[in-house]
Image (tube, rainbow, N blue to C red; front, side, top):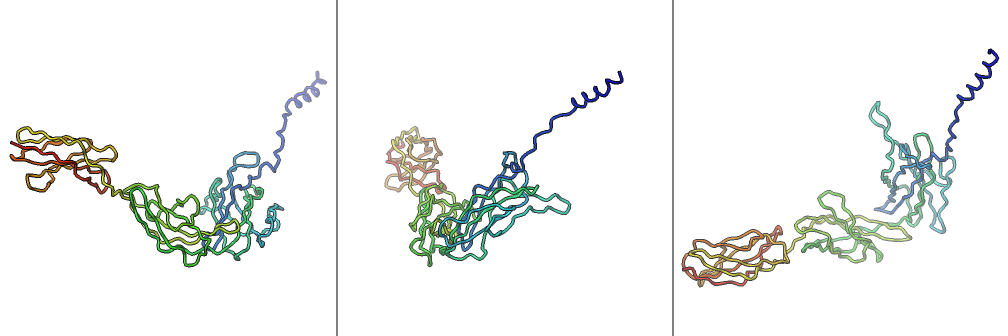
Length: 353
C-alpha cells in the first residue's frame, strides 16, 4: 500500500495543474492613434484640435491618458511632408512642440488623467514664418507608459490672416436679418468671409455660413421674429490648402420683426336687438391672429374703437348703443410682439331704434 502513495501523489499533482492564460501581446495594449488631428491659421497662430482616443489596439477601453505630445516639423512646402515614424517613444525628425500632462488634484488627491474622448485644443505661436509649411503629429501615453502610434499628420502653410471687416450693420425684417459690411483695410482680392451668430450677449458665436463667402452681404433666414440675435463677421483667406482666419468685427444686435399687417376680416354682418348690435365676421386664415378690434362711427363722425375680442372668437355685441344710424368695421390684430393691426374690414351700416 505504501508503494502506491508516490504514484497517487503524482496523479493528484498533475490533476491540480491548470492551463496558464496566453500572454497578451504588449503591442495590443497601446492606445489607438488620434485620427482627427486638424489645424488652421487663426489670428497670427496655428490652432490645433483633436479628440483623445477611447480604445486600445485590442479594442478594450482606454481608461487613462497621462500625456499627449505634439510634434512639429517645417519645410518649404515642396513635395510630401516628412513621414511620421515612432522611434523609442518619439517622432523621428520632428521637434517636440509641447506636452500636455495629467492635471494634479488637491494635496493628497489622486492625479487626474487627461480625459479620454475629450476634445483638445492647443495654439502654436512658436517661431512661425509666413510661407513655411508646418506639419504636426500627436501621440498619447497611458498610465503604464504605453505610447500610441503617431496620429494622422496635418500640414498648415502659415500666412498672414486678413484684418477684420469694417462697418458691419444689421437690418432686421420679417423672420430674417440682412447683414452688410465693408472689406478689411488689409485683405487683398482673395478674401472671403464667415458670418457668426450668438443667441445671447457673451454666448459663443457659431458660424452660420455653410462655407466662406465672397459677397459683403448675407441674409440670415434661420431666425424667429421677436428674438434678439448677435452677429459678427470675420475675414478668411484660403491659400495652399490652408484657411487663415482673421479677427472679427464688433458685435451688432438685431431683432427680426414682421411689419406686414395681417389680412382684414371679411364677411362682416350686423343685426340689432333693442339697443344692442350683434356683429359677426370671418377671420383670415393666412396669419397668426391674436384677436380683433371693433370700430363704430356715428353718422358724419370718424370711427372710434368700441371693443375687442381674442381669437378665435369672431363675434361681438355692442351694448347700450344710443338710437341712431352707425357704421361698424373690424380689424385683425396679429400675434407678434408688436400686435400689428390690419386695415379695417368693409363697413356695415345699422340703425338702432
